[in-house]
Image (cartoon, rainbow, N blue to C red):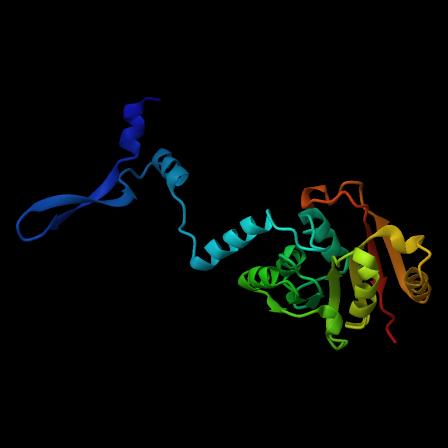
Amino acid sequence: TTKAAVHELMRSKTEHVSNGFHDYQVETGEPSSDSAEAALLWSLISTSPMSEAEKEIQRLQDDLQFSKILGYFPTPTTVAQELVMEAGVSGGDLVLEPSIGSAAIAEQAKDYGATVKGYEINHSLHKLSTLKGFDVECEDFMSVEPEEIYDAVVMNPPFEKGQDMDHVRHAFKFLKPGKILTAIMSPAFQFHQSKKAQQFRDWLRELNWAEKALPEGTFKESGTGVNTVMLVIQKDES
């Protein structure tokens, strides 16, 4: 309740040191009091030093706030969580995130105990997601030869010029039979009269799929007001 009391609680332990000429006391950086009050006060000023990797991650994330990367709009945490849950991700799964970006979705899949493989064409985003501990190839996902090896695909692809439709169709080829792909998409595929949109609708008709509209402004914090939907597609067992 007084400054003097706080000062006493914040006093450090000391240890006796001799340099051969003089004896003196040196602070150890640990609280001299074992009371709960002292522990609480010391916790308020105690911070763990950041590793070099953590510092680099923080720097890259700060830089991204002032960067304009074509097609990059990071997935909000709640949406990333929903993508992972709808895909049925569980411990031990091998999960694909085709455009991993800053690894917002991958981090949620990792929390479920999954191993995530990603692709990212932008060098800064590739470096960031790699520093976060993910296995990421720095290349255009659309150029990757498909293998049906993944237990789930979770994705937020670029939307420009209908790229989301191209990315979803390509990513579906990587999915094991019976497994689920979830994707954030523009709702344009539902009504656009382009050949690409018509072919995408025709493709969906042959599949087991569902669509969920996301609230307006879902990606506002990511810098865009574009409307979005979540597509959920399950591959047949055969």
